[in-house]
Image (cartoon, rainbow, N blue to C red; front, side, top):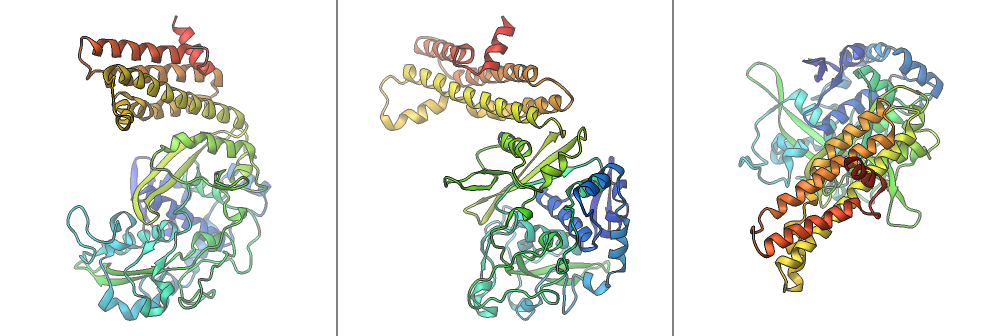
Length: 505
C-alpha cells in the first residue's frame, strides 16, 4: 500500500515497509488531509507495536529518541508477514474490511466517494453535481488511505446499508475513535523521530495485534441484539481499531492496476469510554459537571491556537501518570512540534472542515509556554470585549432610538473583533517560536500586546469607515476610538497592554 512521503522538497510514493525501513530518510508522510496524515502515522505506530519493536520503559524510550533507534526490525517483520493478510481484495479476509457485506455489494454498492469523509458530506450530491452513486473508480492506494481515515475519524450518522442484511445494529454509525476530539502528535525532524516520539513504551500484551480484517483474529461484535463495546487490547489494536464495517469492490483499470468502484459502509466496532492509557495525547478540559474532565474538542467558532493555553496547561501539569507529555518532559532541551488535528462536524454527522495547527514545545520550558499562551489569550479576550464596547459606543450615537431587538445587530456592524481574532494568530505563533528560542516571556508578551493593539485600532477604524464624515458620523467615530484607547491603556487593562502603551510614549 503506497504512502506519500517527503524528503526535503522531494515528494515520493513509498510502501509501508520502506516507510519503516528508511524512516529517517523521510521528513514525514503526507496525506490528502490532516486527518489522513494522522491516520497514516497511527497505522505505522500500530505496525511497530504489532511487530513488538517498541521500547520497554520510559528510560529506554528516551534512549531510542536520542540515538535514533532503527525501525528496520519492524520493516523486516512486515516483509515476512503473510502476503494474504495484506490483500485489500482478498475474497475471505480483505484487509481492514468486513466480508459479510459481500452479498449486498452488487445491488446496493455506492460510489467510492462515500469512503472519503470530505466527499461523502450528506451522502447525497456534491458541489460539482456528482451523485453518491456515480462510480468513478479511485486507485487502490487512495482507497486504502481513505479507509484508514474513516476508521479513525468517521463521524456518526446513517450509512447506505439496510438493517435487514445483518441486523439493526449495522445501520447506525457511532462516532469513530478520533472524530470527537483533538488529536495531538509530537512531530520530530524526520518520520522516524516522529514515530519514536509517539510510541508507547511497555511489553507487548499477548492479545495486542493488528486488526487485519473483520473475520479472523479476535472475535467481533454482531449486529443483532444489544450494542456491544470492546476495549482495545493495547496500542496495536487501538491504532487499527475497526470503527466501521467497510467493503471495497475492485475493478481492473485500463493500465492493469486495481481500483475501487463501489463501496459499502456500515457500523463497526464500538469503543467504550476509554481510560487514560488509551488517551496518551488527550488535552483534558473542564466539562459540564463539577468534576467532569473531557478531551478537548475542535470548535467551529474558535481557531485551534485559541486553545493553546489548554494544551500547554496539560503539558505543564502532567496529571496522568504515564502519557506523551510525561515522556516528552524527560527530553530537556529537545524541541518538538505539537501538532493538533480535529474534524469539525455538523450535528456530529456531517463533516464540515479539518482544523490543524502546530505549537512548539521544549521540555524544561513548560511554565514559560503556559504563561505566554494564557496571558496572550487573556489579552485577546480583553481586547475583543474592548472592541465590542467601542462598537456599542458608536451604535448609541448612530442609532439613538433603536428597537431593542436591533441593538445587537447594530453593534455588530461596528465590532472589529472578528478581524482582530483573524489577525492575531500570526503574532501568537511568532511569540511562541520566540519563547522556544529563549526570549523572556514578559518581553515577548509586551511585543505581542503592541501587535494586538495595532490590530484592534485598525479593525475598529475599518468598521467605522462606513460612517459619514460629518455630524453624528464624526462624533461616533471619535468617541468609539477614544473608548477603545481608554480600554487599551487604562488601569483595568492587562499588565502587558499597559506596558505596550507606555513603551510607545
